[in-house]
Length: 115
Image (cartoon, rainbow, N blue to C red; front, side, top):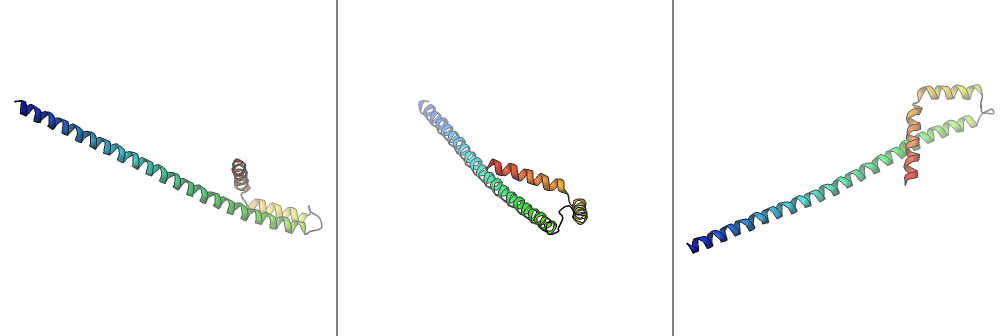
């Protein structure tokens, strides 16, 4: 009887140690997976923000060059506020979505002040 009791106690102890080891292994595994997911998410987010920032700078550069060319062409005339220049500005205004451009400029200014 004592031998059966001792074997049963060893069996229960071994089963308990096994279950604790499995639980510890699962917890360690999930902790490692969580860290890997967090690092990958941060890297993906960082890359996306860098791409979007570069895209925004490219768009602003293109729009700045476009506006700079318009200003250069207007500056060549003798009178800055001539009828020809006014008509050109009106036609440009009607063709462009300036709200979007101004929003982009405000966003870029806000981004650069935060850096």
